[in-house]
Amino acid sequence: IDRGLFHLKDEEKTTYLETKEQIEEWMEQVTTEFKSREVKYHESMNSGQTLPEFSRVFLFIDGYGRFSQTLGNLLQDRMTTLLKNYSHLGLSIIASGSSNELTKGYDPLTVELKQVRQIILLMKKSDQTLINLPFDRKEPDIKAGFAYYVQSENAQKIQIPLVQIERKVHA
Image 1 (cartoon, one colour):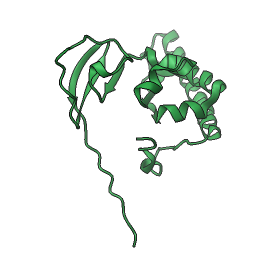
Image 2: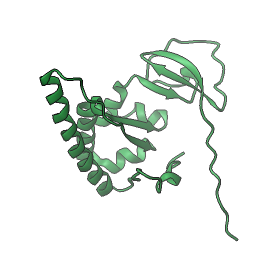
Image 3: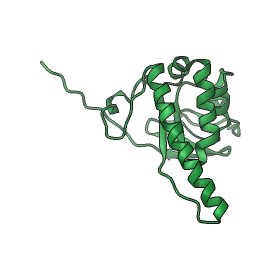
């Protein structure tokens, strides 16, 4: 569902990014934060101290095709650099999208996301081409409320939470 997380935009510690300018501003803020974290990390590593643990910063991409188009080439390069350089310091990207959006692209960000080997599939393993999984001829359909958690080409069937949105209708 495109923009299915819109109802969370007013939650505490949440920034809903919709325009290219908003994304660019967010990227500048997190780059500053992660450069600071990187200094602390290297200081700890060089002095032989225990490496610091940082809180996670999540970027939920709610509709990868639209997000990719909004970014444009320059911001895609910057986002790719963020992902490559700062994932060990707490940056996590969670992207949703159709199989076509994630498998057909050759832009830098899509190529980098294809390198990730930890995903949740909401479809039959045989219906996707994003990652290599063993073929099972008799694979049953995946029922609503279930998915496959895939890590390093090992798939495990899991039950996922059901989220219902209650909408108020004003007469």
